Length: 106
Image: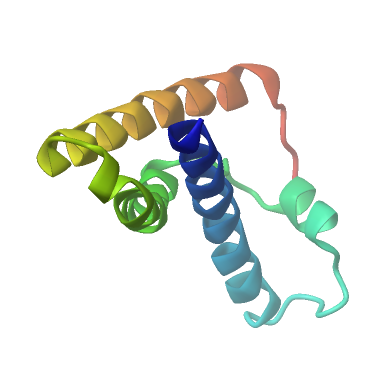
């Protein structure tokens, strides 16, 4: 129960943070300050789930998981390796799905 809640919280942080950082950069790079986040996602000329997305996911999710679960696991190293591996796998699956299902245009 505690682990599931921790993973959900860490996933929320890790999936929202890359888009928020990219959106902020997008707003201040000369594009319209009034474009909404939904328009931003549909008008950017690239895929959203990339290796940078994975790096940012790991950067934000691993510390959250470590802080929430470190006292509840026997091996902190195993916790980090499992979390990193699961994130790499799910990011790869999401990237594949995005490329197969989403037809973007700019």
